[in-house]
Image (cartoon, rainbow, N blue to C red):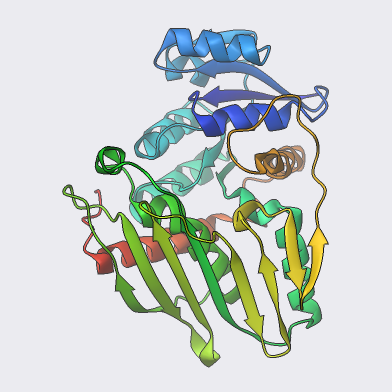
Length: 329
């Protein structure tokens, strides 16, 4: 029987989620409902992806008996409230990254899911991609020796007016979250010392750029940049005592990587419609993980467990505080 999905929000990432799912068998995954606060947008999205129900209320998805699990693809500031609504009505949840605006909200969602025996996972799709699987395997094999340094970046230019509107996030929460998670993926669960931060804030107090150094034990360092004003390489390299592994742009969904100077190209499925973000057909891997967990009766994924999301939310919050960002309560 197919896993029946509801989609909340008709954003670009929701579009790519639906495009990616269309490459999977309908006998396994089926979007049965979509909701947007704008009924016309819901209807357009439903028509585009052959979805039978288009709602103008999130609560209608929460109470729809033909929805097993909900994908939350709304703006960041709505992740917590929408995910909570779904859990309260007995729906399993896959919530787009970053999970919430602060660590307290993440912990509350986890506790609610636990109390109701429901599945919830932060959609950190980077961890499920073939490139990250290869990265983990090669490091575990000792191919680059002991990993000691990570250097990564994510920068994409935006107009000043658009930057000033981003009151729910900032460059750390929206861009550098991938670098933070990669750092913990390789060097965690140890909480690092935030050795250095600098960046500029918007008029409303959110970071438009950031440069960060995280210091771990045994000489391990992660250095990363995020920026709303300039293009950055958007690559990540892990340096070890015997070599290095590089993930090419975009490193969070790389289809090209190099291991000690030897390039590897990664094949991904073809899509019938173009995606709006680079290589985002790889959302299929987290989609498959959700189904596998539900079939096994699991409430959390072993790849993105609740503990990891909580640890990373606390670290992201601490970094933002160091930059002078006022954290939403």
